[in-house]
Length: 430
Image 1 (cartoon, one colour):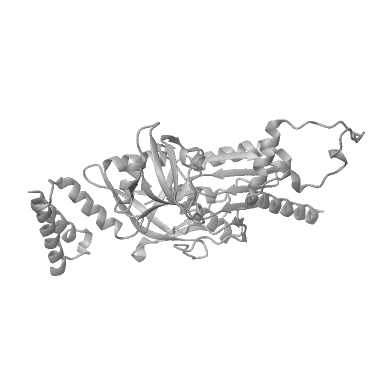
Image 2 (cartoon, rainbow, N blue to C red):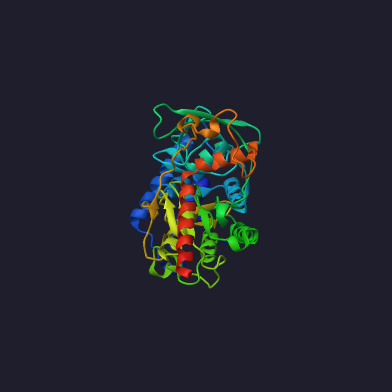
């Protein structure tokens, strides 16, 4: 099954040669230069086994060679040994162990695509764009992405210290995180004031589409006739399963193309189209994105933007416009290989460019300062009450909730936009 996201010496050379000459339809022919390169590989392999300062493990050498071949193609292609492959399958099901960070490689360092909600990484303040340079004081330079991920995973309740380079910070940051079982609830929602539905998708796992439909149904029932629109929050969503991204976009579209993928050969192109079934019946949508929105989340944002179904608000997304296929291999391992680029309905590739929001809004940090407000009659001791209705004290919990809401400036702008659209719709209906 394929999943789409993304002597020993003599035997190794023979296997490589067979792979070249026995591909389907003889499409790849072995050349004398290819054989020369294979002989070079064999010579290096034999020399390492014979003269390296320490005894080496043949299996590890071959595995490193395969991983080097794949990782040289692009940052998202790699070899998955049996342990890593099992971990990947667990992760796509929505539960795994570790810190809760979606990562990639950049210039030899581990780059944070996004922290996962409610994980040790998110609670410690890890941010999209952070570069991890050291793990427990050991440099990550020279490690493959799979090796770095393996080091970040470990026993629950054990600590790991990350050294981080962050834009805007002159000195590196050191953060100690405690590993935990990461259970990803990929869809969460709540009913905001004025009948606005807020739904956050933190990643695209096997349960995302069903979770989205269930959440929307619950919130619509709670809102009743006051339902005005939807804020779909894809910020810091690193992506996941392609079929789930297609299903989520289809939930809000009645027709038209959602995404197309184009591989190396013309016959590899695939197009995915929407089926009639808008789960919010045409109500307005604002999609929130930022630099941590990648891959599958960019597919959803791009499809809804191109069809004019949603207004995209926030900052430019990550720009991962490639599709990885997981191909199981002998020995219970697999390879993750980039097999296609994906394109939005308008035919635009966002690879290394990202989705540009319709309304660009930076995330501002807002703080309510008591001294910023001028004094009024209500501030005077023993002031006369209004007389029309008694004053209602605000509980501590309510005050905290209000403060947290003010801090999310992008969400405030999204809600204001939906209220404006709803207001004009009501005026046109009169």
